[in-house]
Length: 316
Image (cartoon, rainbow, N blue to C red):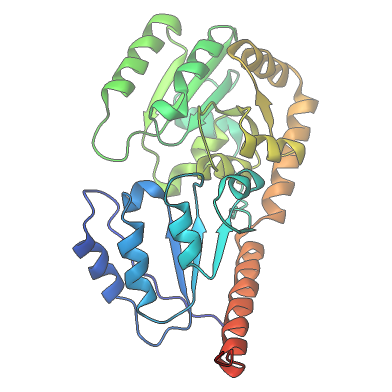
């Protein structure tokens, strides 16, 4: 089945208004067959009711992908969508309505030689490196990783990423100050990493840690898995689902995290086994596979709409 996609972008930053959302809806071509809405609460700022009312006026079936669920406007999304997609069982249980699970896609990728990657960051190739790569904000729990690393001797910490806009935040500055105090000479802050340098950043890390306090899913974590990295993540429901599939490990406390970091750094066989399992997960959930699942769902929605048009309910 040939599928053509036309994208309309919602402004990512700044205050949203009904007028801004109307401008987005006005850009949707009138000859499309189906509307696919990517939803995240921070983007819509609780304006789901007028936004979906505008979409409904186009008279097209609506499929919404919900990237975070369990919030007050879930019902509005459910009532106005022909289908709702979530990425895992955790989000399905939290969503106030029916939904179907289609995993978040992964892009399998390879890294250059580890030695070369470490040298690119000025790191001695003989040093084991624990890393984090992604946005840096309080929900990401970076302070947990820093505390755990004080109990991991003879290893470095490489932190890549930043805030959405600008050079940084007070939270980032405070974290940098803490690493100077407790990880003297063992922590390197690399800042934002452009897409073309991601494989080098991941390649420099022996282990990736994602210590988030809350998550419905994590694109950064999945990118690490896609690079075949050994990942340790917080014991949150969406991450435990992947642990059950062998794609990563989870931790329950700072001491538990430190213990698992030390274990993987000192057991090459266990680390390599986890890396292989990560790549297996990435291959099984690569974007081409996920795209086919979406297309199948879209066709089911279109077929159901045609069925309703062909067999309307007779008046009482």
